[in-house]
Length: 259
Image (cartoon, rainbow, N blue to C red; front, side, top):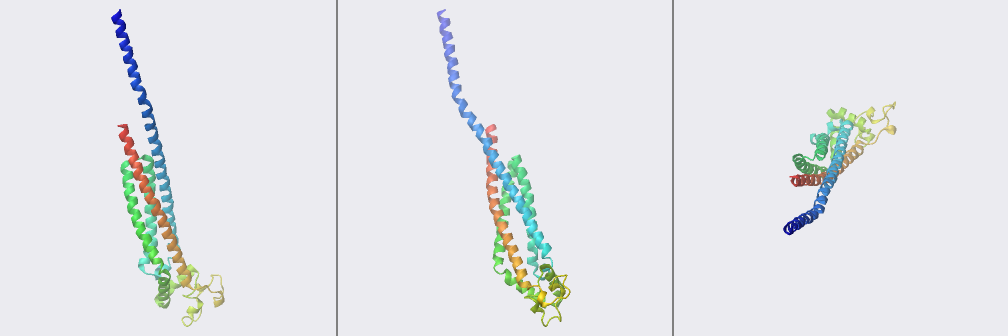
């Protein structure tokens, strides 16, 4: 009987020691598993919102480029071919940004590591390309007005480009290079493109202003708007690249923790 009571007390002490060892492990496991999903949730939706901004910026570039092609299609016929390609390049760039942003939204929601890494690399390459394009546009802005005056003057004095120049006058509602005085000694009367379509007779008192100022201001405004949009997109793309890599790292750590 005495020996049996001793064994019973030993078993009870063993049970108590097991309970004491297991209790401290509980509060260290729960907080770690609770913080990771919250962090991934924040990073994931920050990346999603950034890609929504990219998509809107891409649509804006497409709209600006399309507006230039629609309004200045006639003017593009009298300027160098290199300048003609700028609106088309802006439209193509906007389409690429929109498509990649769409897939970026899908990748952020699905939390795919391979896709997120590829997305970050593409964002870096696109940011570098747009940075180069923005620098080129800003450098060209210094001489844009002088170049426009040179192009329009050559087109105005070239009889083979007289019809395209009249189309420019209609599109931009302008007359000659510096005004109705430009046609003195060149044409016996002002062309109908120098005045409103509803004007019965086109005369100096109802003629438009010169095309040099109007067209030059248009290309200067278009260049500034495009370059400003590119700078905003570059900044957001760099942030999205960092957030994408952070989300990829969080996904990797969470998968290691579950193994």
